[in-house]
Length: 501
Ligand SMILES: NC(=O)c1ccc[n+]([C@@H]2O[C@H](COP(=O)([O-])OP(=O)(O)OC[C@H]3O[C@@H](n4cnc5c(N)ncnc54)[C@H](O)[C@@H]3O)[C@@H](O)[C@H]2O)c1
Image (cartoon, rainbow, N blue to C red; front, side, top):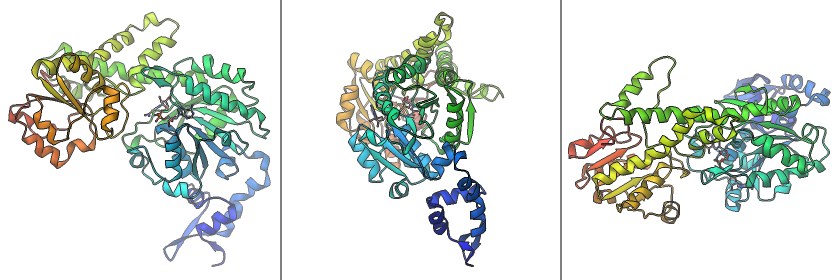
């Protein structure tokens, strides 16, 4: 029995966290047996496992240095992207240190809280033990990241504001990263940009800024670009499961990026260069915006047809995706993608499809507002976020719908459980109302997104009592099974016959 060790004993012997030992077990690097319901590891297998690593230190690569706890990852910006990067690496036994200018966010991380609503669900694991074990820490002192124990830096700051590219945070972070030059290390630090970049940003902004600050890329630091494409809605589309594209400025940077990203991401696709990886992000989103917009154009062109059904059946063809009409796209990525591609193109005049896409997509919420204004004098808008169960109002169709209705003299109120009254007023310039009972007083309802709070039994009861309501436009079909039409209400989901008439 003395030859068998517990997970904690192995962790202590190897100087790693028990989480890392569990991962070694999963990966088959260590072999465990069950003794009386507990996992025990043979001392022998442990020696064999560590021999090559301790014998030849020169062979340690970026991945090994992180996995053995010799180096940390620094994360610049701890919002949706940065927080999830920290959590995923920490859950693989890597020490992470997040920097943010927002003191509240930093304190909340260090208290083991998850301040982003829905994040705990998407991650599918608790981050509190990772904070308690020191694998997740945050700071407002950026100098703690510009130190020799932080080998890898992820840039996760915003790159868009009010619908246009915004480089202020990126400039700020790169200036701070310039301090890495002071650090003498056997391995140059690796910087991986996760934020969305418009095509050409690495060449026009990132590389010149590093150069201006005295850093030679390839010597003083390695640089990779690995845009995120997560869908913070379900666990199947997580950082771990989603295909991940990355590219780098040279072979050394590409190899190091691959080693580091492979700790978390199962499916990596190496692009031939950072330029390609950068462009993939905008083009994949432009495709999506164009296909969603074609669905909308079809529903406008055939108002007397159930285009929703047609497109569902079209999508059964093996090589066609299913795209549905809607109030238009929202969020920081999709609505801006076609614009980004046009701005980065050498010959934008050829991209007529994308120009049309932007025009129609921008018009959709205006058309929805016109339909509502023609039928009612008061409208309740449900949801400020562009998508359910998150707090992201950026370019949400709700904003245009509210403003257009206000311009037409319609009484409009908006409710979103993720936003305080004052936040709603500041973002969209409208008052809120008491939800769900307040719904009874409106002649029209526009549902923007599918927050869980919109589908409770109490909400369903209130909806059965609607008397003044003439029209409900339900962007996401959350109430499609409630037979609301039987109360004399015109209940429509985008794409259904007559949804905009
Ligand atoms: N959220 C998504 O679904 C998603 C998906 C793919 C890509 N992206 C891209 O990822 C990037 C980050 O997006 P996000 O959703 O995480 O944003 P976010 O607003 O949730 O978080 C950004 C964080 O950066 C911090 N920050 C701002 N300026 C800073 C600075 N100068 N130094 C340090 N911290 C700073 C903010 O305080 C905030 O905590 C953007 O480029 C976005 O387009 C986001």
